[in-house]
Image (cartoon, rainbow, N blue to C red):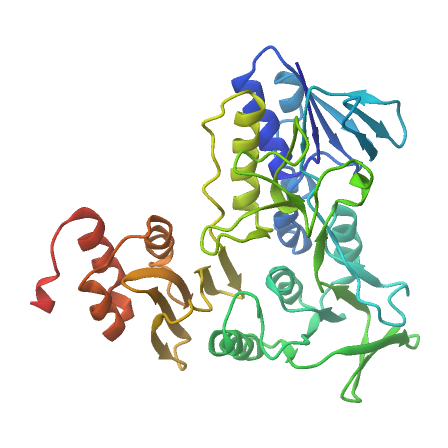
Length: 423
């Protein structure tokens, strides 16, 4: 049995290792198109601030790790998938045959259609090579413009701010991390960043990037007429699933590869995992791409089990989950954080202390949550949402005081009774 995995990120690596445990005698090939050892994109910000060396980004630190597990690493690009013959075409080497195939190619950065995006000194922060280019220029005193303040942008923001550079952030939406935070929480993060010395422009677009002068080689023109001189521009304006090479394969795709609850695509013997997989959302039942590392590793394990023949390995649906550290301010959102139709909500706000909690209910079940500056509730919020626990009388108590979520969790899931302070 030859298991082939396309993509050497977290989903692909975890799947390869799981397959080795589940199918000890199989042949396993892990194909990655970058000329690097398998690494984590989430580690790039730590590399930018020199907290870790390049080797620190590697998913497995032992250089002999994959050899010892008899996992063959192939550094090449897959250009075509032919399901009928169970063959792959590679850019540099010959065809590769497979018995079971996992596509875990992840996402690629998307640059906005802005004049001047091809000028020197403009980089995405998506690959290790991008990281090298940014680290070279993001030095104390450098003027840096970050385009985009979404989840990925805010991770990069912290590293750029800690580099000592003079940082300006430009976000087209009316708040930071708009796909994770509501307007209250998103603007509290903006306020926090400004307090830490970061210039933040929301509801603002980059209109063009022009050549600057000998002192600052770039000039970033905004749609409000202002212009910012810069030494470096980092683009974090979005990503898309890497599925172009699947054209003509017969595999059903939308935003990503459509998968069933066994992680299998529409074509027999071909599976998908990670940022490239469009699977069932736990909260909505819709099919979405959830591009976060915990989901990728979970996908990798489940895909491996199904590839190895364990048909009881069913994907329950991915829980929308985001936890972000922005210059020391922790924020999180889970499930239907934006609210359920005809649902109830509870809110607690302390702007001065940067504390916020918002709970969303459907009947007496917690279906979504947002928190800011409150870290002790993160596991409980996810647990209640994922378990669909009925809160009963505790829903009303939480409507009055959302911080009692731990007591509600214990009372509802472990039958320890009500907190005496509530009678």
